[in-house]
Image (tube, rainbow over all chains, first blue to last red; front, side, top):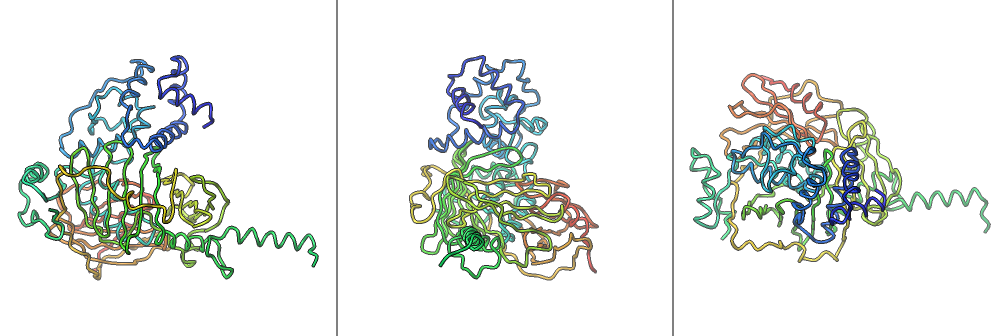
Length: 216
Length: 325
């Protein structure tokens, strides 16, 4: 990416790019996948350099993009319904938000969604323009069994270059809903919260808190 | 003493070769690429680091802050996603805390393996030649530092290749790429900025979040894997793969143990899990991060293969498993 283009993108993010130039920039980005990747990276690095942990301003940016592109480029949010799993929402929400920089530029469909609303499986075909870091996150979460297999494989492959932290990150992003088995540690409120996550027929023995892991 | 042009050229070539070796590499080194991998292994086990990592996969990017520091022999690590809900993973020794700020929750997980934030590739010469080529390609700058590009190229389509940009001074992996047989990117992890060594402070390990009103959770205790013998074997393994371990394991919440067989060609590894088939649906194939998985059913058993290899490889291995009565 040349300096002129960087400056143009920077001006666009700051809302200082003339409307006609903004439209040209968006159309160019919509046709150039490599450039979108570069822009996403550029935005991400910029936030890190500014020590801005949250995607501050992204909602406004999406709005500006939506306005700049016009309604005809923003398909209606058909098929977007509430997820059924309590944990699916944050899992998918994270996966989507993790790529918010790309979404901000090319997330045409997502740009019409209110913050925090996430697509369900019915919206899976949007994955080409709704990037998430893990393919499965676009349409599903991992089964608990497959998640454990993935983690065990990672642990047994420590001698072969496995990036253990990334493995856990991916695992968390894809963590399933009712299948997640976690136990309350520090409060009655925690007990109530965990009841919402855990299937009602859980074996009582499996719910036993491991004393070694207790946090007071 | 006067040197002729040819002698100057020879001296120049020698200087160039040795200038490409990582710090600490001796004159006895026979294989510079393998020595670079050994240097990478050393630095990852000994050196503290902190920086901004860009992870790219499947055409999508995300930024992460990472910190790794050894304190009195205990590994401390922290990873913070820079977008979305600011998910944070903090590891102290054999315990990891996964902090979910938007849910005001902390999940506690045991870290009961030897893996680390970044792990080194095996550097033994025996692992290369038959199925991979290993070479020093060129020098490039990454994260503002001179780096040496090391390429690990697979000979066939059953395994992935690696491109490693190792810090010229320390052999630290500033950028890594996992690529398929045709050179297409599977996953890239690269530092946008980095601090190495003692300058990494303990303060960087502390979560910036106040966890006072967070609820803490832990997974049920895991049953440690037990080495075992298996009556399962593959009759169609891709060339070079062989069994390196067999264990019996029980997943949290599961009633029956599964057999876990690890196959490796010395660089890539594939885990095969064999257990009784249950009602729980497991997708036939999936991509999990940079890993592929394939699941099939044989008689009353479910067989699942998982590994950082192409889909074709996990499918072939899972489909070739046979029960030996």
